[in-house]
Image (cartoon, rainbow, N blue to C red; front, side, top):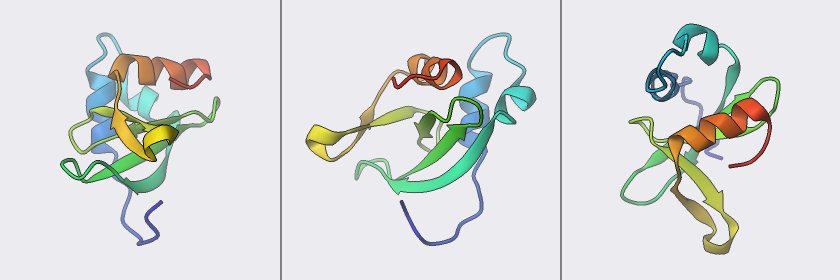
Length: 95
């Protein structure tokens, strides 16, 4: 986790939730808390980490709202399916 203070960036989560048809973005966004920034792949830059308040499952997004997950075997983040990442957070299991 990046220890430098930066203001929370809600735009990627709002974009990601807006991509899901019929989603009330404002209500859905309020179910998450902003955790912070982590270093993503070199060609992507910093990622934003959000935690669902009820399930406590993290969603990790880049600035454009694309989803990532941590892969221990490569000690870093790689792309993952956005819909699966959001459903995992809402349902309380890892993607």
